[in-house]
Length: 112
Image 1 (cartoon, rainbow, N blue to C red):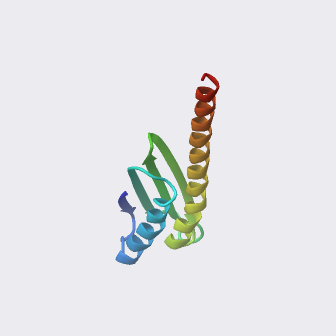
Image 2: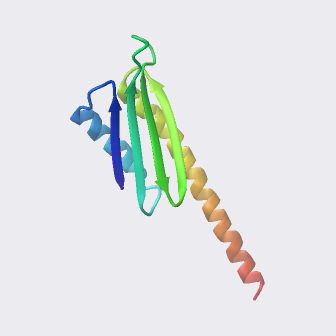
Image 3: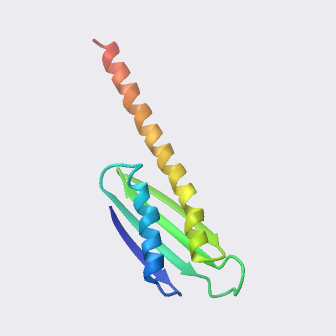
């Protein structure tokens, strides 16, 4: 799995980088094949408090683009909030792929 991390208006500390790699790397167990993930971490400069941290993840897997983003009060919260959205998209993609594969196998079996 290839993960590239970009930080805008904040310092990318080693702890944040490691946290992102652990979270996104865990998704590699769910989906197989070559995966490329682009993670963008951003701090909003227009506001001082509230939901000022944003995490956006774009994954390229199996010819499909999966994208999710979330806002949080700190960077770790934003990363935690984006993970369920991404996991849901991966599950939906896998279920659709498996259903189409089974449907094709059923048709091939009927034609015998």
